Each structure stands twice: as structure tokens, then as C-alpha cells.
Image (spheres, helix red, strand yellow):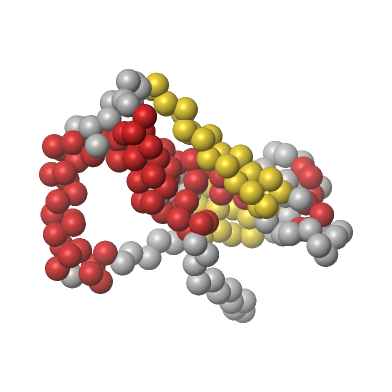
Length: 169
């Protein structure tokens, strides 16, 4: 897709959202079902069921997906798509590229071993390795706008309002 096609695709959406801001608000959903035999959760991905379980550092077998890995995978996916869209809009040719994310966890927190150990990622790093002839100033803009418009990056960067409820079935 080139910049003209991208703009043609997004222009009517942008116009609609300017005229009716509420039309831009979409609720995304995810659903999972508890596994009755194992400490696991079957997550519907839209393509297949993904079985998430305990990470080996917390006693898991490693056969199931780790939700921490899934979070990083969601970040990589969103950041990669955003980078491509922004590069297209800025007419930056990316010949090749990879997106990597890594995060540091102290499993003492989630296992309740040390009250001073955080539950969750202490740090997450996102890397873009790109092959391009674009000048550095354009690449700096590409990174800045990718960070700005990546939904998952911004969700992690600016804590959303969270709530949880336990409902009897």
C-alpha cells in the first residue's frame, strides 16, 4: 500500500470521526474460559483458541502460552503495524524490518515471596531494526509518531482506568 491508497482508505473514517467523535469510540473485547482440568485459561483469539497457563518460573510446564509473552506479542504486533502505517504516510521506504520487545519480571512478586517485589513488568523495551535509506531525521520522526499512535504502547505508557468484577455465573 502506498501513501495515496492509505490516505484514501482513512480519509472517510477521519472525516466521520471529526463530525461524530462518538463514532470513533469502539469497545474491543477478549474472552477466555477457565480450564477445568489445569491451571489454564482458553482464550479466544478470533482465529483459534490459545491456551494460556503458568510461566515455568511460576511452576508452569511451558507447554501453554504465558500471558506476559502475549502482552509483549501484542505490543510487537501493534507497534509493527503502526510503524508500517506511519512509514507509509511519511513515504519512508522500509526495505526490511523486525520489531522486538523484551520485558523484565521479578516472579517473587506474583508468587508472593517478597512484598517489595513488583507484580508485573518492571521494564519493557521495544526495538525496531529497519533496513532503509531514509535520513536520520525522518527515522526520528517515524519513531516518535509510532510511539504516539501505537495503541498498546500508549496503553502501557499511560495507565488506563481499570476495574475488575467477579460475577457468579
